[in-house]
Image 1 (cartoon, rainbow over the protein chains, first blue to last red):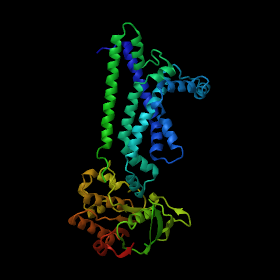
Image 2 (cartoon, rainbow over the protein chains, first blue to last red; image 1 turned 60 degrees about the vertical axis):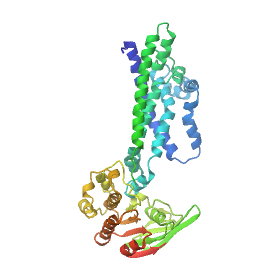
Image 3 (tube, one colour; image 1 turned 180 degrees about the vertical axis):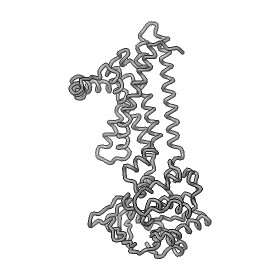
Image 4 (tube, each protein chain N blue to C red; image 1 turned 45 degrees about the vertical axis):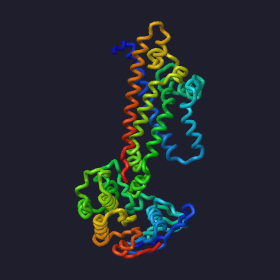
Length: 230
Length: 203
């Protein structure tokens, strides 16, 4: 299957948006997952709900909320403009933000499960061997949860590449800037002779999504398989 | 070395606790299942916080509810061999043994320790490939090499066949007689208690 240069550009942009969205969201997702798995604090149910909101909210609403927050008069948008002189509207960075927000709940769920699967008795063993909380985390909790964390990251990447509704609402459909695979497919569908392009881009989407799912599944299996021997 | 332990804790409906003083040697905490033996070890190790009481080792206070002293687990330098070995599944036997060895204090020689435990041939193996007796000997070695000033052993002989029990018993006798490391051991088996204990505390 041969893609045109313009189509390669779309694939390249989608991979960039997906990778950046995943990389930036990963530590945030880990933080939320850790709080939800281990934390005991009032309002935990509320935080849980808030993190999962993008999963059930209409994506258009999420996009609109992002638009309000990052718009020129929004709390984050005004701050970015005032301090750094940048805006994310109509930019690929905005597309990455939308993708990251939409991927967050999926990533938090996968990472939270992998943290909860770590046997805490191993952590107490580490403590009796002289390891403080930080070394225990670094040498026991983190390595044992890593396969699940990576599975969550890959899943988040796949979700980011497929993001449509929040992206088009938030940063519109700008060729070369915010027109990722799903938006390009949508645009091609509007054209009279776009069928061939739709087919090619759809096949690329399927291949990327399928590949990511398989990698994620293999990693998740690894994390569940006999790593805990007591 | 002297132990001065007096701790109580409410766990659900039950009130558990232990009070004893002991000198050097191997002290056996003896009692039926559910008497709170493991909880008592956890309280001494610092993994379970007593409601009130104190834990003093050689005059040093590790815990005292009246004085509000509660030393963190990792600073107590207590070797704890749990009932299940709790070896780190993502580290080979050698890395498990060396996990706590950079701590200051009287760390034992590595070669000497693996020799008397008979685990030299296991160093490159993964924990999941070890038998129950092997895993338990590695767990004992790991606790010793972390520079423990005394050992807590929780049912170290449970669910092992007779030859395996004999191996572990000899290792414990070596710790008691050759290394002369104080040991606090939990068991519900009177034969073990008689053979190994220099002092028996009944719960």
